Image 1 (cartoon, one colour):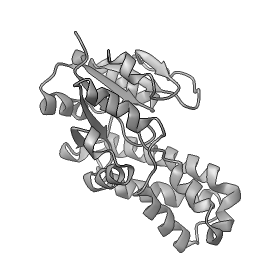
Image 2: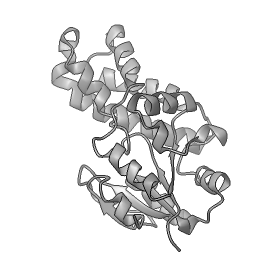
Image 3: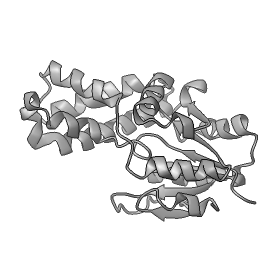
Length: 228
């Protein structure tokens, strides 16, 4: 069956989640962050994901913005900057303006030019995702932005992946699902999507019951995988 619909995770897949810490570290007033920004970005992202999993497992759902703030608080403490309220607010403000990876606009235009449907499926709350899409100028190359908030649980719960078929009326095998999270791509493969893991960091494959169909170093090969 040909691919009709390309679905993308947002954070770390289309949007560079390290961009907020990197940009803040370049600002003169945040000199204290400069030696630590890479560690902070790594801690922040890891805790953001861990807290989403723990909330899904325990049934303690909240929106992704709260999880993002809580992850940042842990990361700031871990690098010795927990008392800097101004820096904390600056990092949170920048998270609403994350940069898209350089290849993203052309890749999405190629998919849309070929008549495929495109959308985001993300843990992000609707207002967060709207801000990121607008900041990156991607609104005209996405058919929809789907948030877990409509089902009240984070990935990789199957109810999140169900949103794609409900929105686009397509069977799972007609979907190419793309994520920078190996666990997300694996779970989506188990759901029945065709999947691509964007493994920018060259990490090992997660030891899970399922594996992604394709592993890429960036998003430039997505149109080819989709049959464009």
